[in-house]
Image 1 (spheres, rainbow, N blue to C red):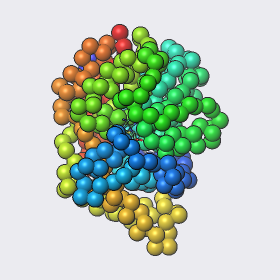
Image 2 (image 1 turned 135 degrees about the vertical axis):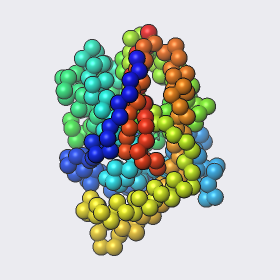
Image 3 (image 1 turned 30 degrees about the vertical axis):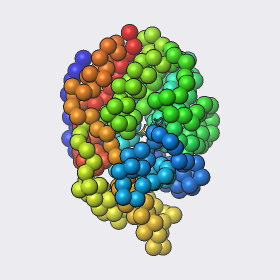
Length: 305
Ligand SMILES: C[S@@+](CC[C@H](N)C(=O)[O-])C[C@H]1O[C@@H](n2cnc3c(N)ncnc32)[C@H](O)[C@@H]1O
């Protein structure tokens, strides 16, 4: 199945009040957790590109996880609410499997868990949720969200490309933009992995942006936009009054210097990746975008035969 849905820029996602309030509370916590939890790794993680390509190489993903939620407050990073399809796609699986075994296959923070939680509340399902990420900081943020909302999750810090997970473990695997986080040569590995990890009839729900390399000009544009939006939204940063905007600008500049998307080249690439997966739906949509504004992306629902 294939269809095209394009949103006009004024109907695109803007941050709702309750998410904004939650982020105002949790963003400084995430910054603190990142300081103690984001560790150096041999391979993988958000620092992979910056470790080798930057003039000043970085050791860990601290620059990413410490800053992610501040950038969410400016709507500058890709998050599940950018995509219309999640609630319907997740709801369909949860109605079919109310006790579903669910894998969140990496997440920058509790954003995907909150999206899943909404679908759980709508459907009344009682899934068992496991969240894997190579870094402990987003797992800490997910635990914070689950504790606050009174439900159980399991978290595992591991590299999803290489770690041991028994095959056919899950009815549902969900993740947002993981395909554009990992390098081109790793994309077929993770798609094959997701297929192995699904039970027969199980479903993968994910997204993948289209675009080119993250050029120095795009990085500079991103950093400048962050400054402008910070000035216009100072009330979203109550802990950074009294001249402390400089601390945020430092974080934003560092993020802009290191954050690298391995975007999909074209529709043919995404179709090739899912060749032989089973029944797959690719719906193209337009989102606010990160370095490129707006940007097109695929909403993917793939059910294993
Ligand atoms: C899923 S992606 C994109 C974030 C997403 N848009 C969101 O809203 O959560 C980001 C996460 O992938 C994780 N990650 C990167 N490489 C990984 C790997 N090989 N195995 C497990 N997690 C990985 C990073 O630590 C980061 O937290």
